[in-house]
Image 1 (cartoon, rainbow, N blue to C red):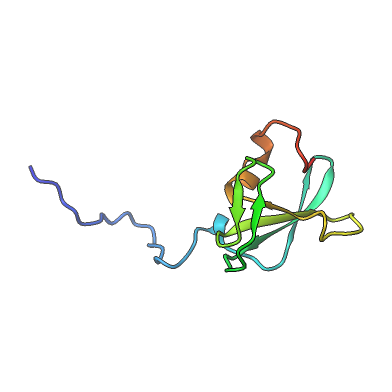
Image 2 (image 1 turned 135 degrees about the vertical axis):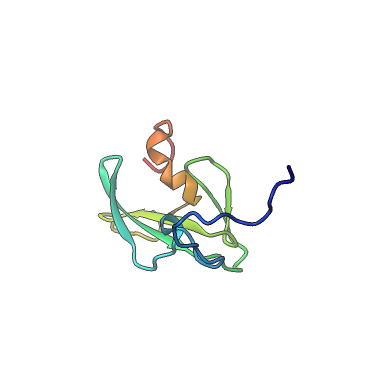
Length: 105
């Protein structure tokens, strides 16, 4: 029997193509997260064309400014600009499962 390429109706509303899943929506206001004994502010940033490249503390890979990612900084720090860290969004979401150590802890 040939298969059908038409989508099946599942009873749940379809998400539009341009709409991100709730976990990946970009929010301009930072949220506060308690992690590694500190309170951190985390903010999703949109891709831009500054040409900058950052180092992700979670995987040590490169995070280009042209990729949506998460910026994290300690809330209680005096100089928050110098203490910002740019994480891949998936690395930030998996931070609890990563081995301790690195420049972020």
